[in-house]
Image (tube, rainbow, N blue to C red; front, side, top):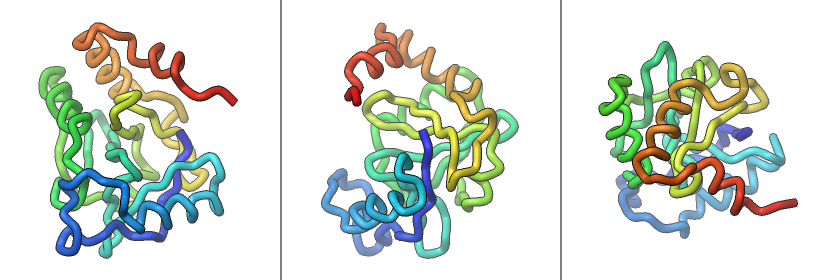
Length: 168
């Protein structure tokens, strides 16, 4: 999945509680418009007013460096069910995971990156701002998470996503 770190900021958690799941956030609309100017295939990643990575439009952002999963702290992002599942799976698999402020540089230099969302649960990020992330494919940590998640729910999540994905 190609992505773009957009100039549009997430709303401050002082102004809008990120725990409320809704899509009426103007910043999301601006981010969607902005991403098309940089990479028409891209999905936006927003930052806060200090330049820290926050979230995407309906998905959380994770990076992996040297086997450690990092993601933004929950003070400025939606605390989604899929996000929580990644924390549970990582602990179960013995993969270290932390919440930490992330800069765009952290994403650019990550070994792998992925989004979490309702479907397809774990979505690999292949490039950010036209820069490849890792090998540009689903990385080994994200793959372990996705395989384990599929086993737990008894569904091949990737096959299901491919089957129901819109066709062009």
